[in-house]
Image 1 (cartoon, rainbow, N blue to C red):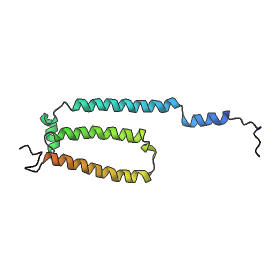
Image 2 (tube, rainbow, N blue to C red; image 1 turned 45 degrees about the horizontal axis):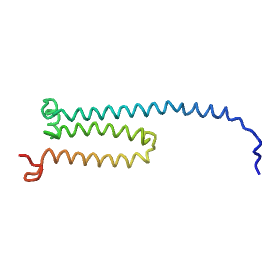
Image 3 (tube, rainbow, N blue to C red; image 1 turned 120 degrees about the vertical axis):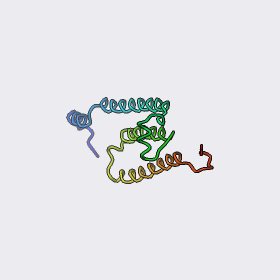
Image 4 (cartoon, one colour; image 1 turned 135 degrees about the horizontal axis):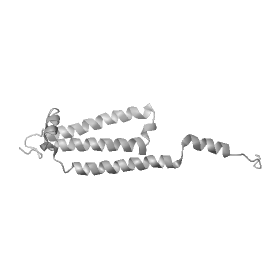
Length: 137
């Protein structure tokens, strides 16, 4: 049987443990900042939806180089903002910034295919098949 009457002084251990991990408020502060950034970028996404980027010369010129025209420019810009927000959620709320390469390899593989699917959507919208439902000409 074990002797439960022995007392152990945990004060030194608790202090060292707390010092190593920091205050709980430091961790909460980071989550509040990330939450505020997500809120701000959601507001930016809504504001960007009211802008017709296909009417602005710089955007027409820049996206014409990659073959994106018309409303597809708005879609690409919206996807860029959404990608940034997804990276924030993944890095901090899903704790991916602390993961090892065993997690990052399949994640990068998935990112490659998601990017390809987004590009297929944008290119299909930019250059529709004549006679299809989305053909406007």
